[in-house]
Image (cartoon, rainbow, N blue to C red; front, side, top):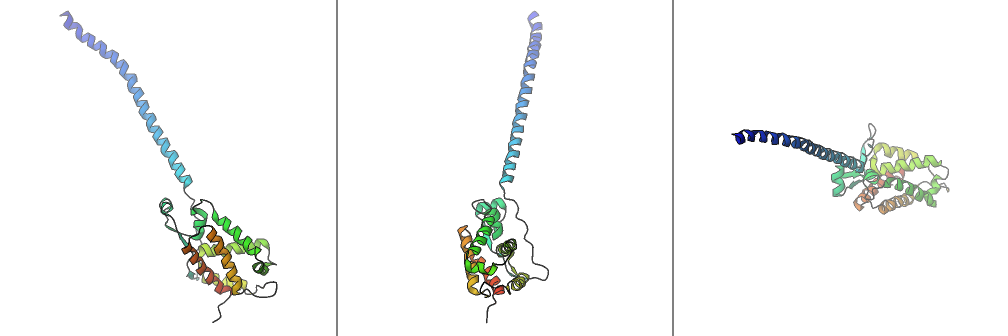
Length: 223
């Protein structure tokens, strides 16, 4: 009888002891789980920030043609490589956007092209002779506008009319107007610079089409 009576009491005492042991253990396990969840959540946030930092900034929108203007030649396009196409969500982009944001070197190659083209044109005595009296800042703005048209804006009727008006009175130091030879030299300079920046050949073919159409506005083709 004594043994039977004391057994439940011993079990209850043991249970109280285990309760005291299990409670801290449960709390510790819960803390471990919470810390793991916080660690995963923080790692996901850091990874998301890194992905956003690595993604190229969105390209500024290219203004469309003015009201009443018609697109004659579309801008040159570049096909992104498969990885860039997936990460950017864009398979084909205008040349200027590719030079600015999607070039394989991950650099802003557009800036290099603008500086090198201007320097090369001004370094060619025949081309530079047409701009000997021009203000430097105005001249740089003019070259930049032409480059934007060639690489992203395409050719519109409004652009053709403006180019014809801007260049009809331009003369070199011998009083000669711009001719086809001068345009071909300028085209060769720009295409050479773009080729040195790894612009694909199909895109360069499109650039030459754009330049040929702009050239017709500057030096009308005699029929």
